[in-house]
Length: 195
Ligand code: HEC
Image (cartoon, rainbow, N blue to C red; front, side, top):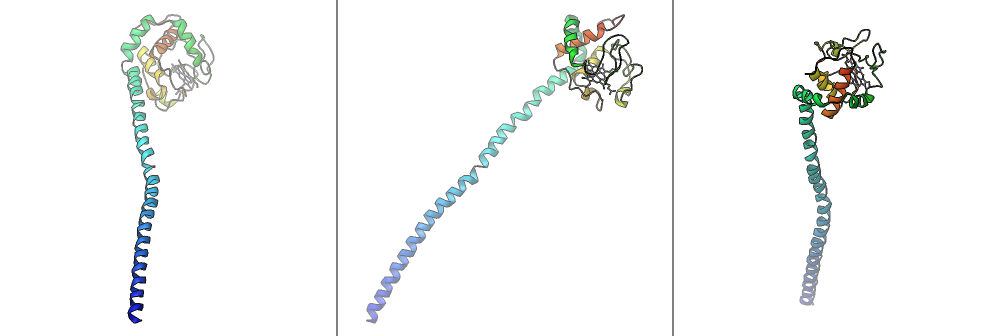
C-alpha cells in the first residue's frame, strides 16, 4: 500500500509538477504576450518622439531661410534699396502706406497720431518730428533717416530699434519697402536725391 501510495503520490506529484510546469509555460507565454503588448505602447511614444524630431528639425530650418532673407533686407539694404529705388514707383508705395495710416499722417503739417507725421522724413534727423514724443530708443539712434536706414527700420522696426514703440512687424518684401520709401521721399517740397 505504501509503495502504491508512494507511487501514487509520486505520480500525483509528477503530474502536479507537469501541470505546474505547463502552467508556468502557459504563464510565460501569456506573460510574454502581455509584456509584448506592453512593449508596443512603450514603443509608441518613441515613434512620435522620432516623428517630433523629424517635425522639429525642419522647424528650425524654416526660420533659417527667412533669417538670411531678413538679414539681406538689413545688411545689403544700401545696395538693394538703391537698386530697387531706381525702378520703385511712389504710386505703389502709396498703396503700401495704407499699412502705416493707422498711426501716421503723410501730409505737410499733418497731425501726429500714435506715430509722428511723416512729411519730409527722408533725410530728416531721426526722431526729429517736431512736437512728437519719441521713445528714448528712437531718440538715441542718432543721425538722419537715410534710404538704407529707413529700409532696415521698415523691414523690422524691432530689430533696427530694439524697444521702439512702433508696434509694427515690418514690410517684408524689399520691393514693397523700396516703393514705400519712394513714396516717403515724395512727401517733400524738395525730395532728396536718390542714392
Ligand atoms: C501701430 C502704429 C504704427 C504703425 C502701423 C506704423 N508706425 Fe511708424 N511709428 C509709430 C510710432 C509709435 C513711432 C515712434 C517710435 C518711437 O518713438 O520709438 C513711429 C516711428 C516711425 C518713423 C520714425 C519717424 C522719425 O521722425 O524718426 C518712421 C520713418 C515710421 N514710423 C514709418 C512708418 C511706416 C512707413 C509705416 C508703415 C509701413 C509705419 N511707420 C507703421 C507707430 C506706427
